Image (cartoon, rainbow, N blue to C red):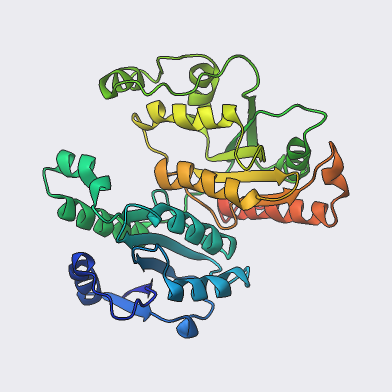
Length: 360
């Protein structure tokens, strides 16, 4: 008997006919035990379970019952320990579905929930965001939305975390060695991992990194089939092969004006060409975010949105370590930093290594 928790914050007095049929079939599915949670007072810590978060938004983009749930989740870093989740956000306007989804995933992830790649299904008011899928599948917008929801639940229920005896880790950064707090923090973590994993570190500061120019689809596919990109350079020569081979991607991201750096953005945009050849459902995403003042969560949401929701990387529990350090080298003086770095490294081991692999 399969079991699924459905966290669906109640929106009193509102009807949602375009999702009612999907929910009815989910509730009636043979062999599935559905445990439904509609109100914040019903929500208590959940462990070792599969969770479907289903948030319905009015025109304001706010679901007050979900906000009450979010408060509880953020206050307990083990609220969803060892859970696996996916998210559906259904909205009445053209806005807010993605931002609510990102905020939800970050909060649940920091509370211990893993999210498989492409963990967000969103329905905007017009469902125009399904125009391409509907055309490719030769169906209407409503049917394309229903298919996407059904597929998300299938992936959630079938997902099994991949492991490796000697994981290959790709580390990307665009920082200056000697002054970067982010690279120094990675050094602390790597020292714990060095005997159990293989590492390849690539600096995107070296050479000119072109951003994606939005080539026509046929041109992008032409280069993608050859494992290339029109703009070439370090992305094609070094990064593409390394991404294809790795088990885990580590993004080292200092906070620049509440955004990741330009070269890292260019990498994410250029990844589309490789993605069209092979997707990344079997690869983990990790990140270190160091801010001079505040705002690390903004970068974390950018990363999970672009690389997990979009590019299909697995988001392991607590995928990101967020710290605050301003002056060069000051990360080493942050209280408790060594302990947190070791904890993050051990969590990477737990996620990546095969269970029978013991590293002293």
